[in-house]
Image (tube, rainbow, N blue to C red; front, side, top):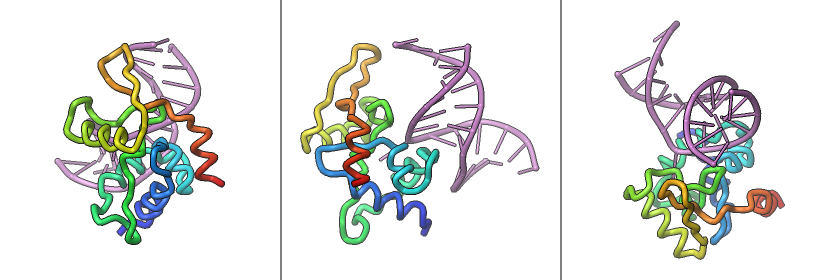
Length: 116
DNA sequence: TTTGTGACGAAAT
DNA sequence: CATTTCGCCACAA
């Protein structure tokens, strides 16, 4: 197994329900600055059973701009969106493109939360 | 070994 | 604004 992946998964587990974080933030908090892409890579292999007996809320990880990182209307996209809405994350439509944006997370706030 | 491709992101254009 | 360019780097061809 890859140690970085595990570290990333554990960091993702810190994101509280109803909140979200960006790939970049997770990378930083995992001690892997500048490695946002690696976060996406690792989330690709998140064990369904979870880690350390606890689930890994992969759906709470969005792009830095608040967008879901999947092709709109694709299976995964819809799943992730549903999960977020279920736990109260507000979604706002955006005019340009018919893409939907997750409520633009106040990144600083979340980073704060996770840090302290 | 070189090259292309990503669940990315910030800066430059 | 929207796009492109780069930086990052694991991974496959």
